[in-house]
Image (tube, rainbow, N blue to C red; front, side, top):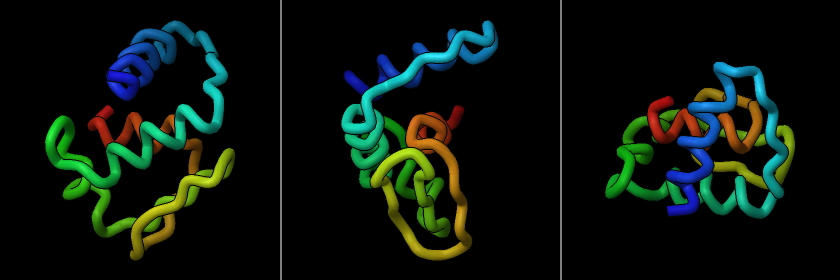
Length: 81
């Protein structure tokens, strides 16, 4: 539920140009959950061949081509946003 709240809130905020700071722990927990599941979102298959490294927190996963960005961006991308 936390992930859905974060991702859907970003769906609304980004087009409107509204920035929101999420605590690192919250964004990291959502990204970690999404990277390891195919139940709610099919993220594991979507990001499996990439090495994601957050430039704003401790989130890091995978092996393969390096992609860096924010933890919230990784959570959103994992949810196919």
